[in-house]
Image 1 (cartoon, rainbow, N blue to C red):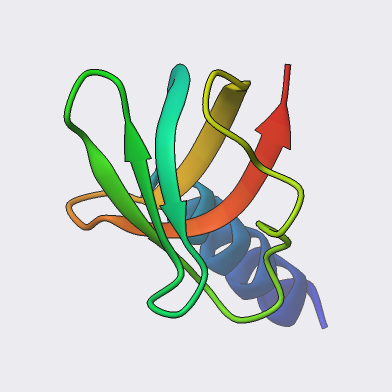
Image 2 (spheres, rainbow, N blue to C red):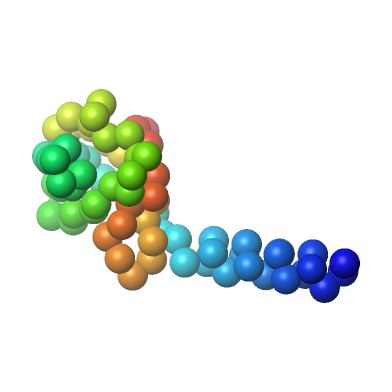
Length: 78
């Protein structure tokens, strides 16, 4: 049982270690491709289930993404 708990903790930590966050202002949102373009030129593709329909140009947001990719796992207005 102890080994199972340790393995679960390591797996949870490993997953969290591969996430990044970016703050920025929205320049454009393309709901058909689920793409968010920030004013600095960064683009992120929102995962299914991530709400982007309320985003508009000029919104300050925090994007949580899979490290090493542009796949957004969460988008929050600041």
